[in-house]
Length: 533
Image (cartoon, rainbow, N blue to C red; front, side):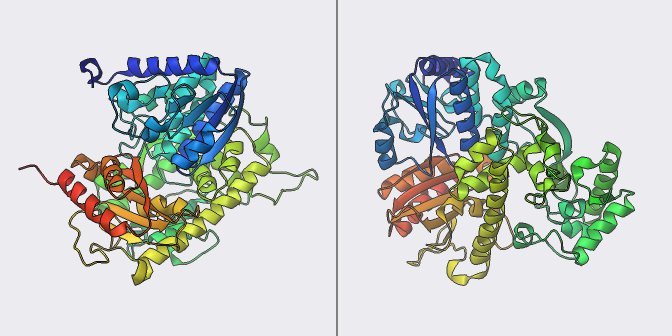
């Protein structure tokens, strides 16, 4: 890299966005190509709205992976410009320079500088901004949209949802880096409220006892009951109507804190508590944590910055939240529980909803919700979320309980692996949720986080290829782990392709090459984690 680019260069990053914005404003028609996860779906919505406001014809096409076959199909499309969001940098050399705009945050493929810094390629890594923690693809896309027209600042809320969906706030307990300026834009417009609170999932939709009982990061049930560790299967396969002993102990803790669980005949959620009520419940939980000898580290994971969304995001019908609770006859509408609809009022819950749509081949439903659909689109997204929960439950149950599919540190050929752990789900887990499963499992009971976890599954596109997903931890990346480069090199060595982030990456390899791939990536990761002589 050139000397002036060796330091973090926000101005250079934004200048590259200005160039892309000018090219987009001159386009006659644009095909947006987006990835299927929450970050890709929110980025696609930002791109689509910004083009529509500029009166530029556009359409959105989602892809699970960007390979040569997908690129060939895109290049055959009649649109004069292609806008790749949340993908493209890893296949930069294969994309038509004259027709393609890329707003991505994954590590680019290693190429000559004149190719990497070509017009229309907007990627934070080129300017020493970390795309894993400082800005997601939706944030990069938002920056370009804002350069197209400052009035697109109201799209900032979707960029925050995308960043949270990419877990960019998890390491520090808050959004950092370039994400911070995007958050400031959303806060300034009243679209998001950022506040210090518990960072547990379900602040808007889970009744109070379930909110505590099914918490996973950190799991609070062991501290509340003093009896057992909450299993990941319990967390995913939650039963909100269950009133078992654990549930009753959560109710007891809340009541002893002097907080009412029911208000007006309805169970209260965390978001409905007053600040003082929240303080009392948190104090009771922290007291249990300290009694168990798990102090500062667990509390730090519990408390952080959370992001509440306005019901009046761009595109949302006025008064939709109030209207959803009654039908034309003035009675409660049972089609969709009003509590569940509140998922779009919390960044973490909104992102989870979008991930569920994408991972089950319905990214267009997530896109509709991002664009403001609070009727049938939101109803369908909630159904997808329930299906997603059940798919995860079955997948995790398979890996944890079936010895044939469990995690291993020895290859099928009998070679011991020193630096990675893996499982091969073959055709028993959908390739779209493979990375999610690996991310949930690493660091749970029986699967220590001492090394990255690599998952294999048969690709679901009929190509007779294998999807590979790898997940590490912030501790491992601090020790030198870079899964993006290891995944890229290992997959290339067996005739595949891959990339991603240092803590999470993926690849596609030919079927039958799993063992060879494992031996290569084990050697590469060992070199990253072992101190040099």
